Length: 287
Image: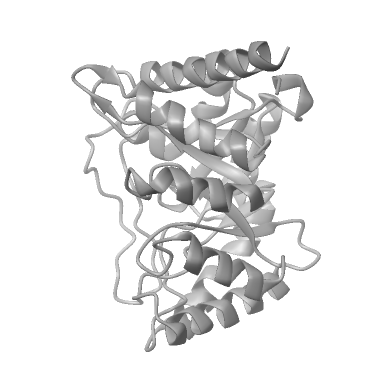
């Protein structure tokens, strides 16, 4: 696996990895009583979102994922300005991450999926190739899984001819294991893709679980764990090995969620270097 095999390389960065650098968040949500006024849970920040594409390019990373709560404005003029900044820096907007809504909730699923569908226009304006949505936050019982599948299938139909692929993630209570994840994807018959996340399930069972689901993943959130000793190489290597065993050959989105490095780019670069070395080791082993 080499960067040249995939347009704009095999690495992306999520704005979640830069939440202290960006500072403010805008908690958009489906609840009409919920305020989307800016908050600064990580401090005021030192950079604006529109500056991130150039920073990606300087780090030789060609793909970006944007969390919905990092968009300071949903006005079309701003969205087109951000799209132009991405194009100027030759950065692919891999995914718009819609960070709220629950298609599995008995009382509010219809409201939430309609709210989520409203982000399709935003994803199109930005030029996003994918839109990641939450499958559900409710218990993984048949009723909730079926409710989610029905709403996600409807959402996928809304995305027809938009150029935006709907993907979901092995995340929250509805998808705690491969059993529920595979059932949902099988039921949706390819209409919704999978963004596999290496950090959402707990070790030691997660490695076998990742081997199971990453065979069908189109994207991957490659989150490493950090401690006072640095990057947990044993866990990261096992998770990456699960991806390799499953045959995953898509991009890795570098997810840095730690305070170990004061500069978040340092943590991101460390993850990227680890994956590159892992790939080289595998190439040497078969070469």
